Image 1: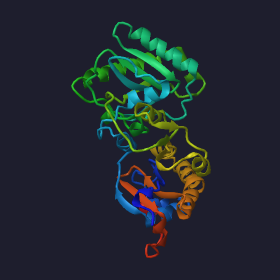
Image 2: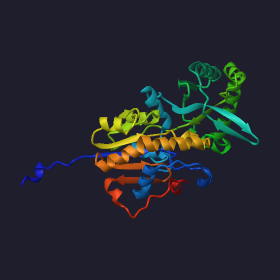
Image 3: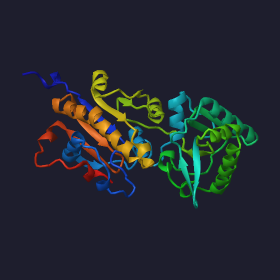
Image 4: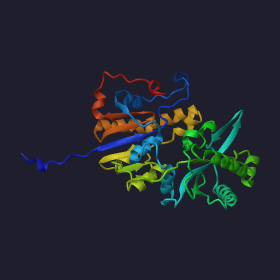
Length: 348
């Protein structure tokens, strides 16, 4: 008999699959009235997995991923780090992403889809902004055409709403709050008028494209020590890439499919972050949302369940960012008493 010293624990692959928007919310719509896709692999996972309490939205999930305080994810610093490799300098840093604001009766709605901002347009608008605010100590930086950052000499004294939570919604209850909120509301109005007047926007209006007539401030907070047990993070989201850099964890672009992922991954815990459902859901584009869910079924859920069944993957933890988490292991496939429910039974 070999001594106990001769035994070595076998470390297996565990995957946390974060897909915000997978189970809604459907904003009061009746699932029975929606042409939902047939997703047998996903339905089996949901029906036979162990269900627990999970993150309520993507930002809470990412805070948990990095060991940051709940509700205090410094999104601007982390996204900037993911995109530039830098920290953004002294003072406060905010995401100040370009948006289209549209009046709708007695409210103003926010849109950021299909803006297709060019690099030249972004540079021109940021230059106009910086000339306007030359004496204030504020500086607008366009790191990418659709990801802008506001550098401030001191803390803004506000709390904000993440841009993904404001898409398609009335902005009034979502504007910055805090001790200096009235000042920032006035500044946002000034900047809206400034951007409206720029030649870039006049040209966009003449060609039937939505104007870039606002910036959305969000992501406040400073970096604090974090920690994670994950060996690799897989995402195209620069925010996740920034978490990887901050925690010195290998952060890689999304793999094409589970086969490519399994071919390159080693034992341990891994995180995959898929965000493609958020935008169609926010704008109530349920046709494209349903199509995207169907694509996930064939590209991800079917191969992953096969990998769990074969023992290649020990566990898949599905985080739909709706307050629940579903842990699925190979032995769960024998839970025959749990009949597979329809996908619609899990939608909110």
